[in-house]
Image (cartoon, rainbow, N blue to C red; front, side, top):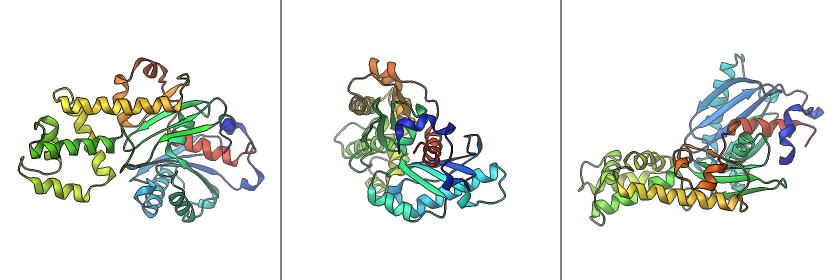
Length: 314
């Protein structure tokens, strides 16, 4: 992928071997859901669709199943009679695509598209946000990743190590911290304030003695389940110092990420994901001043990615 040329992708001719391609599919897939945009070769959007999660860490079979469901919905909106995959080229920005084994397994199961381009969802967020030009994106939703296209045409990625041991500042990370706080409150190690009680209620604990309910929930919880607890932290932050402190810690993590993306602190930044957007007003002056509204989203970036791959610019 020649990232420096993707800004011009839409105006470039197709490579002759892709003459049969009629439609482009752009996919933004994460741990919570999948969004698909279907366009013609000029970038005109014909239809959109959505389905369940397609983060590769949650399983390759699930990812393709949900992607195809969303593609079908987009095709129906575009009033296409049927899916003819060999007339479609698909660009995908998926959480977990940076893990080589997961990416290879995913590509090995592609169902027949004329061409497939797979990158991390952070990459497509950058391409969409800055229309293929230099800039960075801090994406914090279910997971966290930062990516940047630098002025010299080089890509860099920060964070995105996965929800179990990384993704600091993400929804899943906030949910894990909230659960730890709720556990300590149930033990009497910290006061049981609004955050602890909100978590207890969310997981089905009837009172502060219902240890079994917390244990049962934790035993089966995954990334998505923990991310579902994150809104509770925001909801009670004004009345619970513990929740407010967690949000401040999340801001610190995301600001470290921004510094690592661009040590000169000059490139424009765009925020993607519900957590990053809700924390924006808490960022420090320089980072907040460099935040710009995105020109497009990750699905737009995925469309730009696949159009560039088909073009003679490659």
